[in-house]
Image 1 (cartoon, helix red, strand yellow):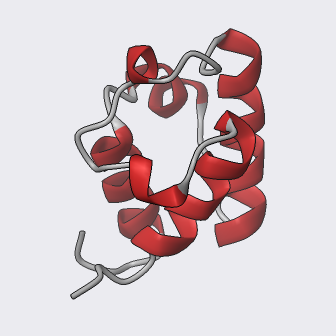
Image 2: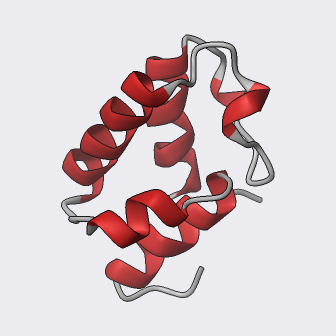
Image 3: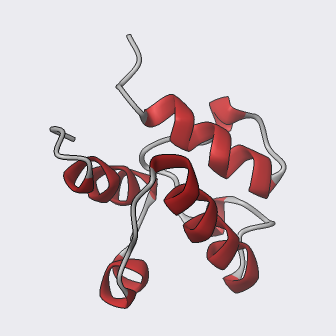
Length: 82
């Protein structure tokens, strides 16, 4: 069973990181992907903001530790349980 919103997040990350969505897990971190650097991190943030119609502040952006943390932050902003 998929988690609401997570498949969309996987697609956003997979497109930027040039990987299969299935490779993006909640436990994934930047070092798990050769294409996840500071430039792609900026693209990830912007694309997630567009995809989910949310805005992250600087503190949130710099506090992201893994994909699950990004997902939880998005869900909180959308008012859903993460």
